[in-house]
Image 1 (cartoon, helix red, strand yellow):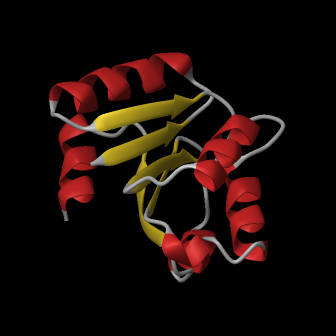
Image 2: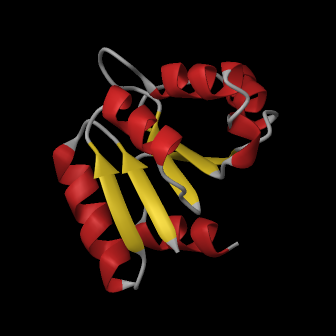
Length: 118
């Protein structure tokens, strides 16, 4: 299973990448929104772990761009963030085809694996 992690926090992407690699996933990492979007648009992934709160180009920007280009519905995106986001906004995001679920940081690694295998 090919997984992309998009998060500006390099310690998070490193830990997640190491954990998922040990669990036999093929992992790619983008430590910024623009590089994440480029990977999403140019490669196929079975799942994308997407941080919503990144400087310059956020997870929201990635979702908006994919939706505008008609590419969002073909994805399996798992949102995760430490930011406070209203339930209304979470529900709005979860209603979009391609957005699988939302996890609040700090996330247990076992939770991420459970979502990936469901």
